[in-house]
Image (cartoon, rainbow, N blue to C red; front, side, top):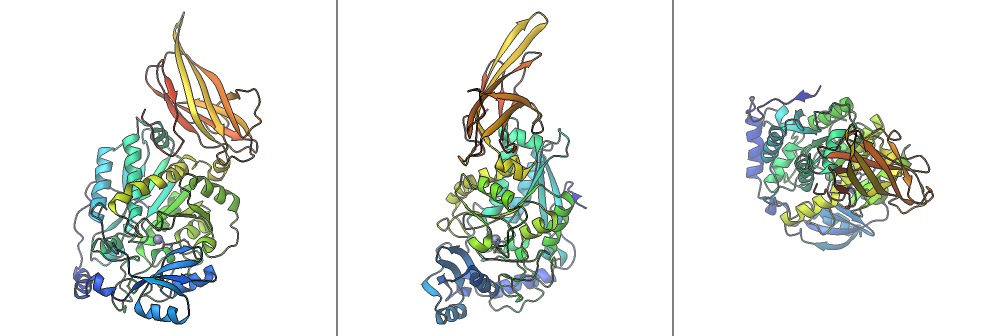
Length: 540
Ligand code: 0X9
Ligand code: ZN
């Protein structure tokens, strides 16, 4: 079961620190990371198939990205020699400036724990902290690191509510991913009560975030290590102790759905070492146990980099049973950042044992890997100036996922809403004041496709279940286009006293209701949703 976090996080672990000492000595006595990577290069590799890339990955080649025509990989001198002989190297360059840096704006593991604690202290009715389990080093008694999760929701409105689960940083060096999770937490909590979108999402949804799935690995990264895996040293015979030859288990190869196949390695020193058995690691056990118990409606596994949104299957191009829905949701999440979306065996390389195949294959949860950032964003170590832009480019994808969590595949086929305008007027009546709200909005298929809008509806305060709100009419008299202006009137039995949330959503001719948009309505004023939904939060 999930342990609800009470007050103190930072009590020191008891148990032996000999192991920790050993790990520290290994790292201290090894040459500095820069010297350790001496002779390493970043190479452009020619490939003929994505299966060939998967084979390199399984052999320990540290593939950073896959583009049309070549893969970019960090190679050790023996790997360089081997691939040069095989004729695969198109170009070689030194490791980039910024390699294995830890820009000071990125929160450390301790900063992250403190941030989550402060967040739950500051917003006790919105944020609950949970300890999902131990890191590998904690299981050894070497360190006191847990997999911390926060649930963000307005607890004053009881559940059950549709939920999304965002797991960041299975791979330690993917530093942008915990920052994105924490930015989302800040955005929602700070916006609650003022921003209509943040407010409705916390009223109607649960957002679960694990900013650091790999806390031990994150601490390695803090020490300027190019670190991907956890820090399990059980089979440590690795020369150099650093990428691409480090100990540890690749947590994104350790899940138990199709574990042990393509794109994963049996060699403990390889970057894609799958572990001794499926779910051998405490970190993947913790995520498995939580996701199984909670069964969120959508799972997002945040990685970097490559500007991609990937859905199952991860090992093959066979279509998953829900391909149509998975693809529709990927397309909607990708629409404002232009990320490519699809199955990784086409866009990247096939792998087995990853998080999303397990969550989708075992539990049927719509599950995505989002690879944040592009080739010019500083690889795994984006400069501080890139953090906000990268967060902003992925933000709409996350907000959209939260909005459609009640019925992901269905909503993702449905239309969007913008330009909600509400004119409210207080009418004096014999029994007291009444309020009349005139609502207009635009309903449209964001793909600009052929699906006609068939209906629209409005609800006040709470999001009505799809199809149960008050109908709005097509302003031109007919629902017969992919975009429609809609309108209608709501009469309230008493005058508006305080701002209230008003929801509008639309349905297409195939019966798919899209996600709602919400605005505040004020006494005798105009609520106006002028922004594009999910791109930005607006001032009240
Ligand atoms: O290799 C991975 O685990 C992910 N890429 S990363 O650069 N963040 O390490 C991709 C996992 C998505 N699935 C497949 N590539 N099949
Ligand atoms: Zn990754």
